[in-house]
Figure 1 (tube, rainbow, N blue to C red):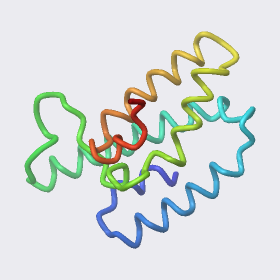
Figure 2: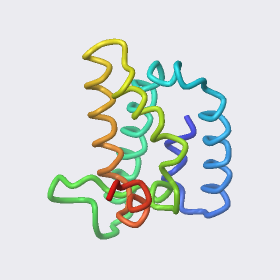
Figure 3: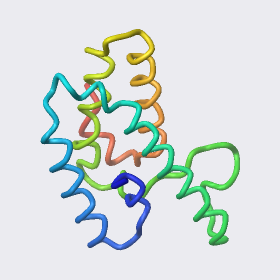
Length: 126
């Protein structure tokens, strides 16, 4: 339930959330990471939906129309993907079934949709 907190605007809340998320994901052994793909994918979807509702209800611009997913503030921070990206990558590379690998690939795509361009740059292979 840490990932939906990434929609908060308060910098202190975001920093605490990322520290906690980093500690949790760092404690997961590499071979166990694929088993967390579904949980992470659901959490990212919850954060995306929460941000979408916030933008609709707040009357603010952006993210409301055109079917484009809104950016999640906590995923627009520098190195924001560091705690979660390994889970998806291990799911794609080491998933025990084709379904799990596909789910990880979908989750990775959804993560990219809600992450700011600047936050993605360090993770792009040149």
